Every structure is written in C-alpha cells, then in structure tokens.
Image (cartoon, rainbow, N blue to C red; front, top):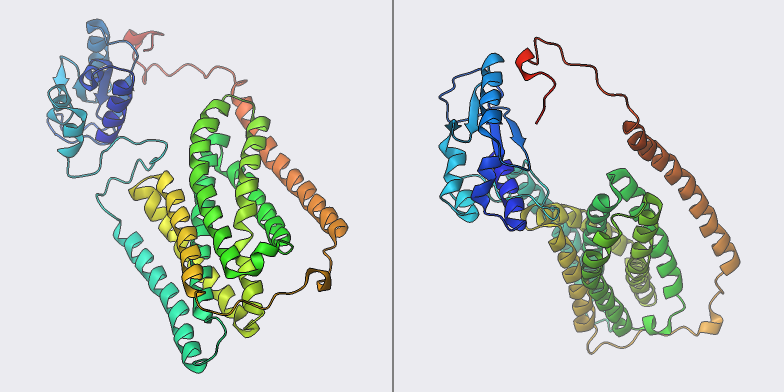
Length: 414
C-alpha cells in the first residue's frame, strides 16, 4: 500500500504539485473487518480522484464503509494513520527512506511493484552465483587442460576464443531481454513482443552470419574485435533512439508499432549475428577440433546472461540490462585484441576459392520463414486485439445488489 502512495506522490510531483497535496485526493479503506485501531492494513481499497475530496464526499464514504463493516484507514480530516499522514511533513525521499522495505515509486524502467525487499533476493543471488560458477568451470577447466597439452604451439590459444564467445553469449542474451522488456510496453502485450522481437533478432542474426562470411575484414582477429565493439556501441546508442522514438510512436496504430519495433530490431540483430560465426571461422582454420567447446561455452554463458539480466533489471532498471550488454561486447573485443597480440595471423582463404552463397535459395527460404511468422503473428494479434476491441463493446454491467451498495449512495460514484 505504501508503495502505491509513494508512486502516486511521485506522479503528483512530476505534475508540479507537492507530494503532500496528494493526501487531499486520497482515501484508503481497510479491506478487512478487523480491528480499526490496527496500524497495518490488509487488502486495502485505495481511492484517488483528480479533485480534492469534499467534506460531503468524505462523510458519505465513511458512512458507507461503516455500513459495510469496513474501517477507514486514511480519510483526510477524519481518520489519518501516521504511516501515510507523515507525507504531509516529510519529503518523498524521507517518506520512502523511513520504511525498512523498498517502497520507492515504480516506473516503466523498474516496474517490479511487489519486489519490496531491499537488496538482491536470496534465491536470485544463489541462481546468479551458481550459473556464474558453472560458466567459469565450463570455460576454464577445458581451457587449462588444452593449454597444457598445446604448450609450445604457435597457433592462437583456444582459451582466447573461449573467453570471446563467453562474453558474446552473455551479451547477446542481455540485449535480447532488454528488447523484449522495452517492446513489451511499446506493443502492449508480452506475447506480441516475443513474436516480433525474437523473430526479428533471429532473422537478422542469421542474415548477419551469412553476410559476415563475405566481408574480408572479418578474416582477422582485429576485424572481429572491431565488429564486437561496433555491436556494443550500437546497442548502447539504441537506448537513446528508443527513448526518443518509442514515446512518440506510442499513439500510432498497432500495425505501425509492430513495424517500427521490427525495423528497430533488424540492424542490431544483424550486427549481433556477425561476431560468433566469424570467430568460429577464425578458430576453424587453426584448431577446428575446439569448435564444439566454443558452442558449449557460448550456450552456458548465455544462461548466465539471462540471470544477470533479471538481476540488473530488478536492482537498477531495464536500461542497465542494455548497458551490461554493451559491456559484454566491449570486453569481448578487448579480450580478442589482447589475446591476438604477437600471434601469427590466421591463414586467409581466397574469396574466389570459397563456395558461392546460394542467394536465390537463401532468399526464398527467408521469404518462407517471413510468411510463416506473419501467419502466426496475425493469429496472435487477432486474438489479443480483437479481445481488446470487444471490451469496448460490452454492455453496461448489471446494477449492484442493494445489500452490497447501500441505498444512501444511490447511483452516485466518485
């Protein structure tokens, strides 16, 4: 309940009003018929209106609560419990800080209303540590064994590539979860966000993997590291683009919002799909037997990235998920650059000796995927949007029984 009050007070403050002024617009009725003197409320009914409550309205609300056997918890001028009333003499920051729980106002960036624990949840902390240790073991133990076996070899150390793909796996999931969270609000439904975001990312990443095969700059560790840096920078910049574009486009029709979300995902997904296949091609020219290890490391670290995304979002906000993804791509580039210093360059393959990419068959396959996705998406969209539109066509609800709504209230509502 106090978090609701704090959130409402922050909205009042954002409108240029004093947080204390909220209390003249607020009524809280205890949801149980217990002791009216109790300082705690259970399942409270919170009533807020734009204009301050009048004395007549408050008197009628108090009489109605008593008629129903309920107890007013906070009614301006009638019954004011200190838990809420102290907002009259305290700032919003003092109001929030005086409580031992986290009652800070919720925002679109941190929408976890029921997460009132201060600090990281114990179960989430164990999951984060456990997945982190599993990633380290999967990364380091095979690397140490292979390093001892390959001592004296002049080819690049596989552990460098393992660290690179580990950062890629975590960073990819961080960026993906940020996009799912951000577009869930923009599109209105989490299911639609998954349908648009995942399809766009997977499609664009596949195209990026294919296009990266014919880019000569990706034939060297320096080029792949630069691609990782570029991906991280693009991810960090995208948050500012989203902050500008998405609020403006929020009032557009659903179809336009889907198109905008899809177009915003494509370039980022294209870059995200370049680095991992390019690193495997580099490693495959000097140590192809290590490629299965790279796949395993990338997959395990993507699990860690998923857990880290939840932690970052709940503790610091959704934006920090994307910034963590930027850090992952940046660290991947640093590792590959530092690890390749002094090492012989990989053997280059002449472009005219490579098998040509079947662009026609590839294009047909992508079109087929797009058609299938469109069919699934329109089915989901029709279900949700039709249900939403039908809600506006529902008839007025039947009148409330007289024993529930007192006759003295008549047809009046506030």
